[in-house]
Image (cartoon, rainbow, N blue to C red; front, side):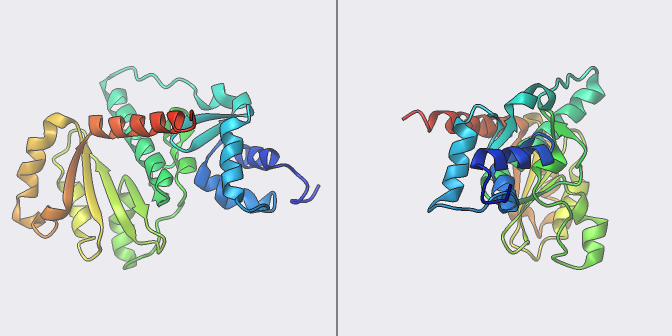
Length: 241
């Protein structure tokens, strides 16, 4: 069977099987020509229609779909048992949400924590960039940038948005990484519990970080989760009418 003979749904199924039973729409668009020709006037719309309407597929995130047959495997339970596990659980949930949001907004997404999971989805399989692009001096990439929790890259592979998730640290390590990107038009985000905003304000006022102070943004866990849920709900209701 050639790439011209299989159906759109079958091609999507093959992509998901090769990607751990699920895939983002952006990943499907990228991989689709390996399995079937992009025929018709609007092939990407056809792909989107298939994942939304074919019972073989189930939506499991923002622009992320899984094979219904393997839904339970992908959505396996991840219940934290103690304080340390709860902290790690929240950290990787925010990472996963930021990756999905970035993919939905058509950025290239990167995380160093490729083996962590979010609702059963491996972060390295949500992210569309496996290795941090060499957009500046190698020593800056290797010693600092590649360890940032989540990065969204634009079409030229320059960092557009960077995110550090700080549950209890003093923000200084994250801000030091951001300083390395001061010569780029990058937006900086520190994500933490709402009650840590005053600590953020204290640190960002320090002289060492004044060069990036007006470009740094604080976002609470709650605000990221609210935004993510909003995208999920929008994806659900926009097709009702």
